[in-house]
Image (cartoon, rainbow, N blue to C red; front, top):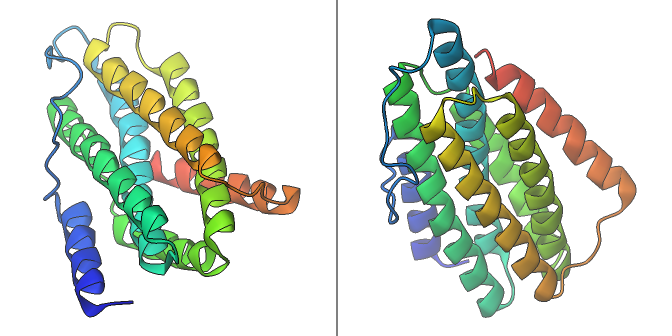
Length: 207
């Protein structure tokens, strides 16, 4: 793995953890108002968006690690492009948290480090397994976002627009990985991923 690749990865980590992410696409909803929300609704939206932001921090770590360990240059490019699109999600959720008067998770460095390690293991297992990990991760995230759409206040149009676009993007990432030759992960691995995600989401909801 070339030194410059590690330097780029370190730069991306700093951006993800310090609020330096900049979206290439505009935020899905032009309406950024919170005036229609009660205090309880703002609190709920903030908690849910904080969890989504943590998910994007983890996505950056996973894709960066998998890009570093990819054997095929085309797969490396695929991971890098997916990470770039996830930067949009990171920036959108961060900005919406600010609008809601909410904060990001104080455990973000821990989430990033853990996800980076998992991404390295997935990448070192081989490209087909790495792609399989992408498919399962994105499918689980897609389900998770669908659950958040059910819970977000109906009148929080800006947050809902962000989550809906994120859900569409995650579905595209999963489909692209499948078409690139992803291997199907063993059931115990999928179960372990779900349990780890549950711990993360429940913790990030509050911290």
